[in-house]
Length: 112
Ligand code: HEC
Image (cartoon, rainbow, N blue to C red; front, side, top):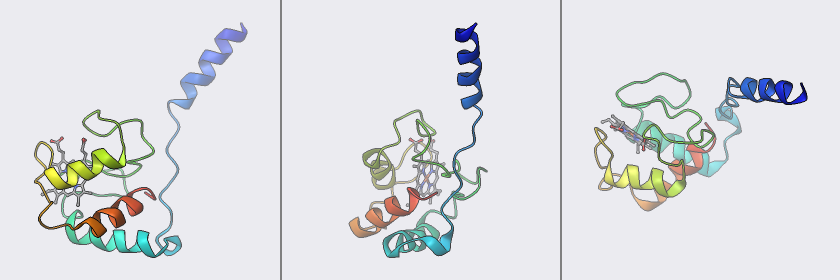
């Protein structure tokens, strides 16, 4: 009986929505720089504040989800490698985005 209730509660957690993105006006300087870099380099293919695909999957809740679109763990290292080397249909962007911009992008993506 108690076990049954516990399972039901656990099933309910699976439906929970992720916390919403931090409002833009609350971003710190590095996160705001990351948003600018996102607009310049990523926004043509990804939405990051709504859960809708564009030319690539939505990046909303990227680091809150247990795994990336591909199933890989959502870590800074994996996202950096995706940006630098590309992934599947996503082009490599290492030539267009420098190390500072990657740090800023990661800081911003942790807020969405
Ligand atoms: C020209 C379009 C395009 C641009 C520009 C682009 N992406 Fe992507 N991105 C994609 C596509 C398409 C996928 C899905 C790749 C796949 O799995 O085939 C993707 C996947 C991803 C993933 C998930 C990788 C995984 O393992 O599931 C991340 C994270 C990501 N992009 C981040 C970014 C960031 C950050 C930028 C900006 C620096 C960016 N992308 C710019 C098209 C793009």
